[in-house]
Length: 328
Image (cartoon, rainbow, N blue to C red; front, side):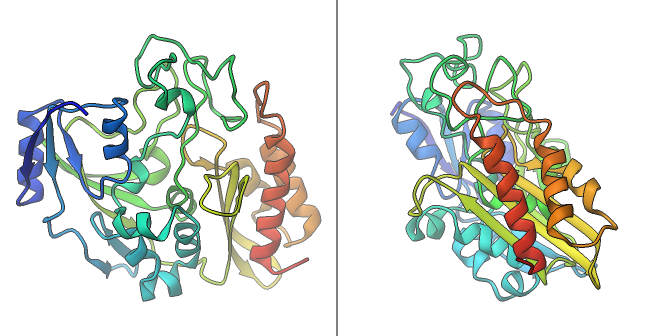
């Protein structure tokens, strides 16, 4: 790990100002990803600005009936919060499927969506990686790409986003509130992360120096019919090969509204809009769920070693929707 300056922010404004003075600095919250990256020389920073003393841990209801998740609230506290478990059980289930108890006790709501890919070429500094070193090439493109993207990839990067929490947030239409040098702004969660394009080193649409202060959830309408399915190589603390967050708003047997997001398949949490469009206003039947899954997976573009993700994704969408609807 390379030497760096350390300071402790006293307020969000102070944190933003400190980073403005050290443009190649980094914010530190739980540190569950950043410290690993710095120890392995995958990332470096001239300055670390510690956020852990900031008053951003509150989880509270908003005036419109939604919920505000403080950026520095721990993942374990959020997943087990009474309002989250009652009104947003999809989010709770997704968060509890992630990592270990110890990591969830350290990781924060703001840091979780910012974690970097677990692509082995990104972590191995002896191999080319456009995300780690722009212009060096993508080792996974012609290498071992079993765990990589089937949607939205480019010839510059085929990595996938690792977060479970972020998949549920994409399905629940969350909004990220940030504070930066130009003031505060809100970003719809589906627009927060980027596809790789020609700049795979950029994971998000955050502007330089912006700090996440909260993640806001709209009023809940998916508390009764939901399911988070995570398919992985082993049941114990593995990242998803494919995951699906499914949420249904029902009017009798008819699907009034639906949200579906996938993990493990793209550079960002993948909102399955084609599947959603195929289901709105339709009866909740296995046949309709299968047709929706087919519609979404028809756009998949697998690589040499991950063709299995296409039928796996189809089956995962189908199973998640059946579980959410309570049908066999």
